[in-house]
Image (cartoon, rainbow, N blue to C red; front, side):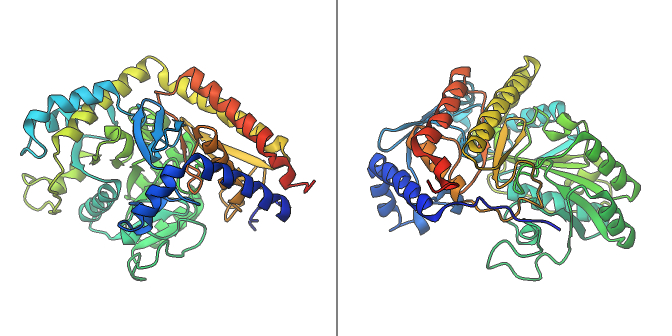
Length: 460
């Protein structure tokens, strides 16, 4: 039976601390406040996505460079949100800018530009399962295409989705984000997830029972980082057993690497864990901020989108107006070459080590203030969970996030965007220097000294 931990906070102390942190934020960001008021007149909520909003209003960014961003008030921040993951190379990397400028002569949308072929060949070289590639624009688009391919190839409709995994905004996948089978959003038709079968993540006994009684399962779909569920991650052994199970039942394995692709290693989680799926989706870091995604996989499986496939092969329609945008493809080529180079030079391992140092400081700071805390770490990503020192996806569900949101806002007041207060997604990039990591550690310690989070649990 799972428990839902909360930080037992003294109400008066919490309100006092919140008032102090919000007041400092208001004083520091009058320009963002003014722009938010203006933005609300034209944009729903003053933003272009729900994740971008946080109370009392979000900061609005005017310039970026490397690991630094500057808001409309002139405040500079060390950016550890990285646009929710894509900016693995930091902002405005010169190699990417040069690559995009080199392709400018082609215009925005040439027909079948050579850079498209070059990019696909790089993906083939770097991503283990990528015998054949198709480019798209967003992670949502890539996942729904991968699933359509899997259904056509197998002639089956069922898809296994794990609790705690997010697979984009297609209606059928907006279910099971937490431990329940509840829909994640209003406006989703109740019948949309009819062919989605929920399962506990990497509970192989539960999964095998499902596969043994249902012969209409086309694929098992997962995010190897389990990012939406709290970054509980995976293990090589568990993924290898999962791979064996899907092969035994003749079910395709799809890695949704929209987040983990290029970030855990150049070839993503499949290279990091040494487990090769049948299909993979990638986006975010793939083009280091430009709008590009892909679905790739075994040639036989991908043949269903090949107009030249043999007679009798199922035909899947997949196309899009801006799927071969030259700027995004050029950026991806430059990014993939840089990732491969950095991997060979040990920079992925170094970044993972630096990220671990931030984990240690965060846990020490929260626990030192009497707030039970576990920080999950995978490669260059972190997520913070309050209410216990040894939590799991089940025991951390529905935790009280008020204290965590205050902490992130407090860091913003002192020049570190560790995460958006309503997000808890922390990403580091190759643009973060050793000095940046030292500064972040110092700011974390300073925030706990300056704002007295320790009084939350004592009321003193």
